[in-house]
Length: 135
Image (cartoon, rainbow, N blue to C red; front, side, top):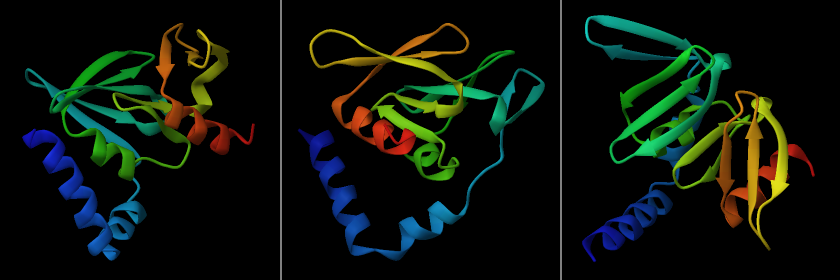
């Protein structure tokens, strides 16, 4: 119960503070840094295929591999360039890496990506994706 209360509270806050989301939106990132062990990886945004959520962490998928970062989907949703679309509550995809969109079941869709991965698309995600791709 607490979680849904927090969720609706944060959306109320966004509406009240109308200027804050605009500030976040204008701050588009062009690379993401991750750390594994002693190594720091710098991932240029154009190499990013998709992001998948795991609690307070995300996994960033690129051609070279996958990287884990402690960051929220909400942050990436607002900080990534416009060609990144949140197609599901746990996936943000680089639309330039989509090879096809296929019907999956009666009213469900999935996207096929250049790396061979397939991701489910929520109804709202599909609506946004159609808009972004002018379908």
